Figure 1 (cartoon, rainbow, N blue to C red):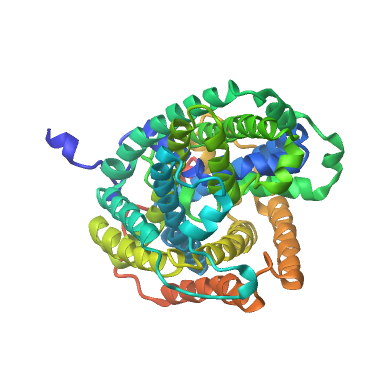
Figure 2 (cartoon, rainbow, N blue to C red):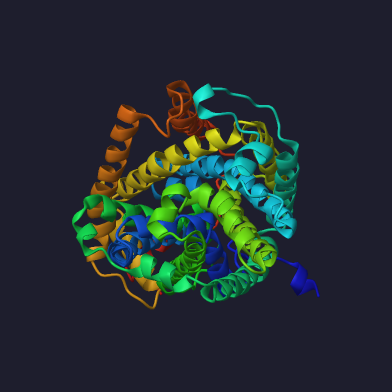
Length: 524
């Protein structure tokens, strides 16, 4: 019994109890809300079946290579993002803290969406949203003022605040138990449960009247769309964000792998599992949309003009309307929103671990202490800004800026730091190959060190110019400036502050000279 209670340790650092546990945790991080509500709409509006071509190209030549970069840095330098990047080169610690701040900002609003989904499980039982689902979500549920009114309020919405607090307490409890006893055990339950629920839901959707029409709309290719560079950018963006790469998550998770682990093999399993789930989500969503369009006597395109096909609108406005129209809708609704809760929690766990792991390394805190301090602070930010009457507006703005500017800038900084400053891509490739069944060719160094940073810089510059010229979402300019650009500036400033703080002690577990000798084959 004692062995079951004691968390595995290697080199003074927690490690996953099994490679399966790590794979499930990596899959859990990658499979999040965006897989269910973002991918189907993005694919449909960017060429349908033809979108799978740039999507697979992006997966193979952007997502997985950067995923391997995260794995190599985390596994070789054995630390959270700030510690691992500091060990690679002291100049890069601030890049690690930038990744920590990105994860922190994402998780404080991510928890709120999970809280919404919990409430909608309850609403599904009696289909309490009525006939006007957009009105129910924006009005009765969120108490959201009109965008045109330019109103701003931090007045709490209690039926949102309470489930959000419950989400945070559950996350704190799991994280406080450590990597193997907390995150690993939770994912061994949540991921299989999520897959079972989602397969049941998709199976039910496929037998609805009009489902085939929906699938035809989803998979029918518009080959002309491949000539549009925006379609390719959309594919790279989807892969990039859905795999949870370049903002500390996979780097941190890989740092808890035992020394002799199959790095690229586990990465390929996680990457393709994530994409398989996205395609499964697309099948389920569009089979259901096909049913609703048939009920309304419309095509998917006509129905989509009046209903959201992606994001919050799809999940909390369009789907409740569909649930009300379909036989056995209440059960379908419970399954759908339960899948959102499970997918959200597994991703939130990974975000939280990025932050708590960094605090443990920097300040020498215990796992329990860092979990409670970070968790309580995060909960306060969540309920203050995002469980309030204007929470959705703030969430929408912050999410857009952090994902399109923050995450992409983090990837650019990390790849350029590794290739141009540290000139470390060769070392990392040799490290990957030493501990992997699938070997990385020399071309991997050029891909992650030079080609992908150029592509990502183009993506970020295009987005930033558009945001400067046109603002975002029709929101007041001051609101976009404060919560959009403000979140970026604040994150960078706080990252600089943490970088300037002294380390209590630099954790053991990494011998630079020994690692170099191993890479060069001087010792076995």
